[in-house]
Amino acid sequence: MNDQPLHNFPDGRPEEEQPKWRQDFPIDVEADEYGARRDFTKFMVLTSLAFVCGQIWIGLHSLFRARSTDEKQIAKVSDMAVGQTISFNYPTERDSCILIRQSADSFLAYSNQCTHLMCPVRPDLEHNRLHCPCHEGYFEADTGRPLAGPPRRPLPKIHLRIADGIIYATAVELRTS
Ligand code: FES
Image 1: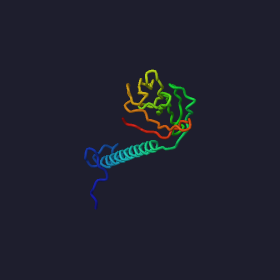
Image 2: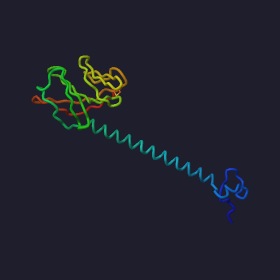
Image 3: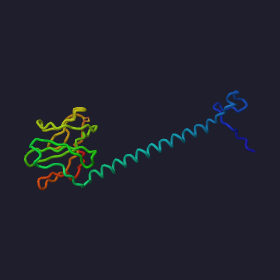
Image 4: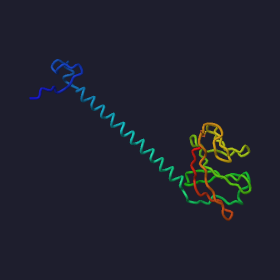
């Protein structure tokens, strides 16, 4: 015969010595705590798994973007005066970029999403820089590297190719420093 009590009460006394309300609604404290621990562990495992999946997705997304080799025609050389900038989208229609004609034969292009919190940057070529108005971030126009404000990483660089008077975007280079 099994002498084990049906329920473990918090004060350790047997069931018949418990108050009436506790006899009517007995709670097995040990089993209850075991269930709570098990639920908490399950929650932590699922949260960690979701975090790991998110990191993998971000990694794969960045890798895909960094290796994009699809060429896209973005402008004609003859359509841009020295010091002029134009906006274009590359590698997808959701990725806005900026093309800068620095001199007669020098063109530069960057993603125009600030590396702080993704606000669009604006050209300020008089001062050889790009300006993010959201938190007063500045990037050097020649290199795309951060000059001032919260951004710590350079703007992604868009590689260009010029052939027969046409400017093509050829790849995105993500940079960490
Ligand atoms: S989003 Fe550009 S400085 Fe914050």
